[in-house]
Length: 454
Image (cartoon, rainbow, N blue to C red; front, side):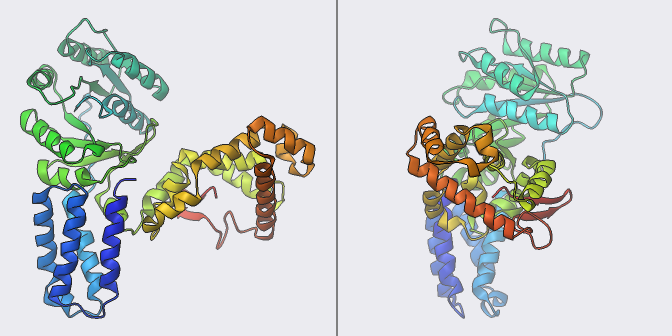
């Protein structure tokens, strides 16, 4: 996960600060020296790090902090606030026209950053918000680029406008806007061509499109795993064609996070979204305060709640609660809960958003293996409908058949059945487990009580 190494190092620094009753100026400077090294190792721009440390130090060695009751906590609070400021302070929404006209969004970026997939992800988000978007295939160079956009558009239920690869991107963009005007579309998203590196031809083509159609938003898609290269690319695009916002992809990969911490300071442009996976639903709004909280190991409970609200079927949750109360909970319900958890990114993704868990993620990932969940799913799917609904019928011969069907040892089937029986007994004894007053796993929200599928 992004920031894992940085988060671990910062938490170690702050653990030492918390342990001191009083802080001297030397204590603060020593801690900030370690913070500086951690940020540089995370591939944050040197200029950005230097300014960040200077801002924190000026505030942290002030009288109010040094003479306060808990100076260690105050320093952490200052670092948190400065991190938020560094990434933009406020969340920036995608700006859509309010005059009834069509909003034209041009997607830009280098080849391999995930631009075409991200284009479809944005269209899906807009559709969820009640908008009618049109995707325009303006990448006529990369093999299968048009087909990829068409496949993703179909998955999102969004129309894709294409003229093949024999027309110029400028002509395709103009024709797409004309098509949108005559067919009730509210947003046109232009998927433009990328290159392996920044070159004049690409910049000229993007500039020509902007001159030919009235582009409202130019969004740059950059690969977070490329670190400072992503920041340099963003700076070049801003200088050459002008951008309105940045989308960071592959934030779920082995990235040090420097791009997210540097881009706003270098370009002056906000990060709008971060892509946390390959699925077309894996696009999150970028919240500077929540990201700072994750980096400092404070968790991100608000995003966790939103994931639950978006992905948990409230009616199914109520039905499940009734089954638990009546002790009729079966393997089908167990499987359904696992699949809902997968929709939210898996156990590791959910646990990483809980306060204090960040520094223990490696240990947790060793204990909670998503491959193990796949094996459990295979075991359950190898059962008959009767066996899934009534686990009590599972005798040794049935278990051997299930193990053979799932391609696992019978000991894994026995282990799953035993764990399931224990969970069912516990749930029967604790009717408040899935909700109600004091219920475990429940989150309050505008839409009512939502439960995590644990």
